[in-house]
Length: 116
Image (tube, rainbow, N blue to C red; front, side):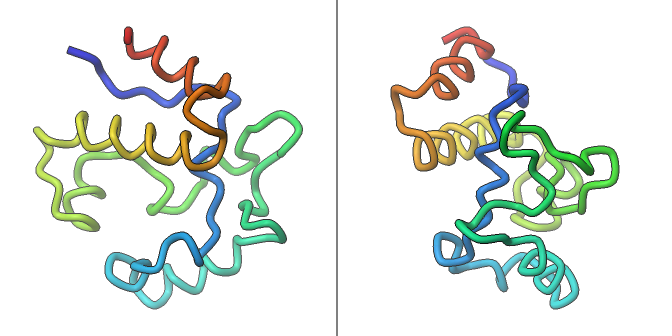
């Protein structure tokens, strides 16, 4: 069974374009929504993403909604802890494919990291 993991130098989750995430108000508090929107730069990318290196510049201090942790996903999305692994894998795969394409280097590296 594959275990979810974040792959370095991907950044697909840092594509925050609110037009592509119309349900933000359903799982973010008003304060979190304001923070989220303030983080969106031109092109829909997070202002905290080093786009050249595809790395978060505030990783250790990133907001709650940027973290893949069981209690956060249960609170925000209603995902039970035992479902988090499969849910996170599916979410990452969808986001990577939407941002970079299903035959992209990022997609291939994600599948390889998971043993697919």
